[in-house]
Length: 559
Image (tube, rainbow, N blue to C red):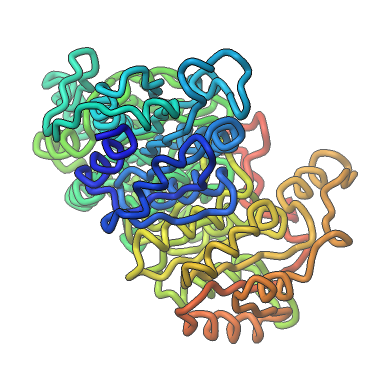
């Protein structure tokens, strides 16, 4: 069979059920074969960047790799931001790009771009197919690399002649990559050291990152934390790995984390980091980060360990395997006094929820979404103030329920990623919480959501500005609001949505907000856009200023 047939057959054999793509000349042989495929649902997105974000959302919601198909040249280069977003957050993607025929590569042919070279720094691995007989092996390797070890995006570049040439399809079942063998079993002596430290701790703390979700270790984490009664704080990417309804939960830590989580990190004597990478938004000023603790770090990627923060007990391995081994060897520590301290912090410094009878407060909006969805929605955010408010005030009790661009901070990510999640988990409500700035970056995907009747709820936190930029300009740049106010240029979001065929509502006060949310949840045959006109000058607190330590956070305006 020819290369295009090999590709489709292999994807079907790998049980790929959804493909986000946009056709073009270099990939027409593939699209011709897709025409006859009954197993693969192709979603025609309106821009390749949004296609990679949609595949990313699909992957985060399911744990399966998201798959993208685009043409050569600009088709490939348009995927770069989406690939980088996935790479920073360790999300498994496989991106297939068309390429000019092999004989024309390097000749500046029409729609030629060196996409392998361009994406090398932002992919886990990439391939240029040079022999059609290698195509099946390359595809299977791409999926294996993307999903094993520390997950990440893999790109496969397909010259057009490779798609038309006949080659060998073997139906391979086993992939052998001698030079790629991620370590999954933790070192026994390191596990014993970790258990000893935790057993003897007076102020232990578990710090869980995105790896706890990527490694599907939420049950092991919850079992261990409850048995040992150790407090747990999660990163932005780790939200949902530990249920926030549990008494051990301290919520999120970091720049906009809870007071008690940041103080616990600062004062603990043993810190167990589970699938986290000590990101700068988590640590604050490094010399003030958890200065009194012995640190245990479990991660499947050895390059993450010791990269930002030195640790006493490094453990390279799969968190799902390592956590139960530590738990089994650990005695329950005596930490009643530690809990008294933490509970005092919780009582004296709770998260503040601003409410008003006249205007919609952003925190209240998030609380209402959490209440109406009963905490069961898949929440997908864009990037900015609304992202932090969602992380703080939505109560996450399930894994794979909070999808956001954490590492790269990609504005425009939220809506298409939410669309991908809605394709992935049609039995769960999906709510995109976005800002008026970020939504406009990918609003054109309303055409896709309407065409496929995606019952997605899009909640625009409309404060007529780039909220987080405005907040920093207010606090650190003497209120010089340079190019961060959107009021004059913002569209009528209700009319915009309706022009695409979506349902749309507007709310200007708390009573309307609740009515709009309840009405939106009843619509299941198309996307719903909700324009919530929130308090324009509300700032997101707590906040750790740039260059400050975690215990130097600002809790509110009065400070």
